[in-house]
Length: 85
Image (tube, rainbow, N blue to C red; front, top):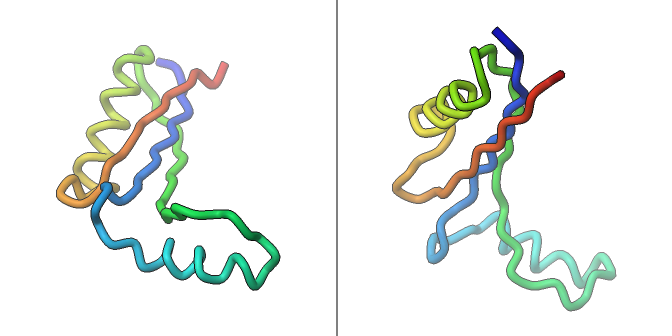
């Protein structure tokens, strides 16, 4: 068995209201950041998976994401798995 580092990124699907992103975008000019648009907030999760190979680690991380970390009705997600060697 090997250890694999997993990164899951979850973001709202296009067309889903993002009040957190909108609030951040409205605050940017007052902080000196002009010309920034399209701000969308999301979540990221990092964890370590013990698996026989990268494919098994990817499958485990994807299953965890689909069952617990993301709501597939309103969110898209991506899973990246890297060896910890």
